[in-house]
Length: 129
Image (tube, rainbow, N blue to C red; front, top):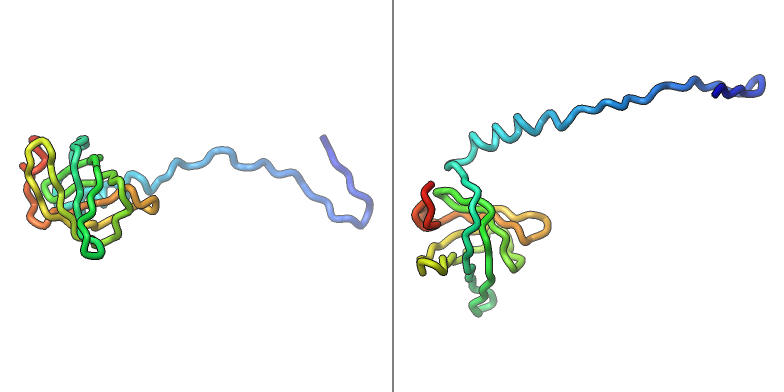
């Protein structure tokens, strides 16, 4: 279809729009960089936990499940909006073991958190890492 404009009016040529776009080229290199920065290898595993913390002089708790675990901590989904840098106690209900940890990352949704163990211990999770 050809469009014509009256004399003196600007004319425009039709240009084809680029339809091929790159898949995110930074993804692979960013993942490699983060893998090098991590202190320990992670494994995907669902470990159920109880998370406890003190707030306003009262003990609070929430259920949690890990997304992945490592020697030094985990990423978990916690049923409470824990603030960044909050000190918490992780309780492994199957073994009864407890570990002190700190919230070192949190997603904008506040349910996904990164927890760093105060004393890294791969055996806490009850898995072979």
